[in-house]
Image (tube, rainbow, N blue to C red; front, top):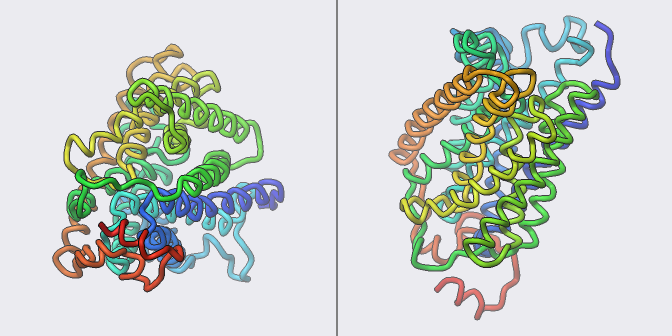
Amino acid sequence: MELDSGLTAWMLTSASLVLLMTPGLALFYGGMTRSKSVLNMMMMSFGAMGVVGVVYVLWGWSMSYGESVGGFFGNPFAEFGLSGGNIFAEDGSAVIVDGLPTIVDVGFQATFAIITVALISGAIADRVRFAPWLVFTAIWVTLSYFPMAHMVWSGGLLSDEGPFASIASPIDFAGGTVVHINAGVAALVLALIIGKRKGFGREPMRPHNLTLVMLGAGLLWFGWFGFNGGSAYGADGAAGLAWVNTTTATAAAILGWLVIEKIRDGHPTSLGAASGVVAGLVAVTPAAGDISPVGAIPLGLIAGALSALAVGLKYKLGYDDSLDVVGVHLVAGLWGTLALGFLATGERGLFYGGGVGQLAVQAIIALVAIVISGVVTLVIGLAIKATMGWRVAEETEVAGIDLGEHSESAYDIAPARIASEVK
């Protein structure tokens, strides 16, 4: 097969953009924590890069895209260490499929796995030891992310070759189920297992640096063009549609979030605008290639409004999702996945002449993703709690997890301010 240099360049660029999203997430999450926890929060993202970047080459690609085992996951040994002849030929040259070297796709897909695990960390900020987080990362990506990627994108249970395709062909353009529902459910389960931060609901736990939050949101938006645009697997009109839909839905989600804030709280906030960016990006991820730009407007508006309302549920229901992973990624991911039942073009969505079949199958794949992620995370989370233990010591949590876990501090803060933060 002849190399398509344009496609290859686009996919390498997209992979680089998606990889940038994880440092962007580190800034976004880091700014949302208290100053005594910012380094640990950022280290959780960088730790995910370290662990998943190695694991993906060893067995992650094989479990995601290798020989199928019952439609649930790929055989981890079939292409262990990128062996097996599907990536490199006997002479060492790169195997090319449809103009793209498979090794380039390996890089692209690895960045998706990295960012998915990193997303979970925001729900358990301020209270978790670093070593158990790294262990969780390796096990969860193996037992939840890789199988989900296989089921959706490699002809498995939740793909258009699976059993539900008899109702309608499932749609997940860039990871509504694989990334956001998967991570959002895991975040909720871990938050429940690990428990609340000391002082949750009684003490203010405000973001310490909204400038970092806004910068992180901007980098996430920029990187998302590789996330969604690259998922078109071509520098073509499909990628252009994904680009425009990503921009439009995200812009609308900012407005949706700010309107809710204005009505509910009396003022729009920078944190709300940044969170609206992420909510819109999450919602459009499964839909970017299958809706119209006009359809992206209500998709984003509703995503922003729903997430703005959902982030307050943790106070009413009593779970401590530190940085609103559940309210943004799970809620917006569910909405984006289900919205395709209404907004998918080509006579698939209800608003475009389709029946209820597309909505039904989108609901089914979302439910299956919730169950799989929930059960896998519960087992892993409880096992780590019973063996290694999750929580830092109470005095470490109070004094600052950055010092306790990493022997560092993000800022050279005056003693008086440190004392006030500890209180």
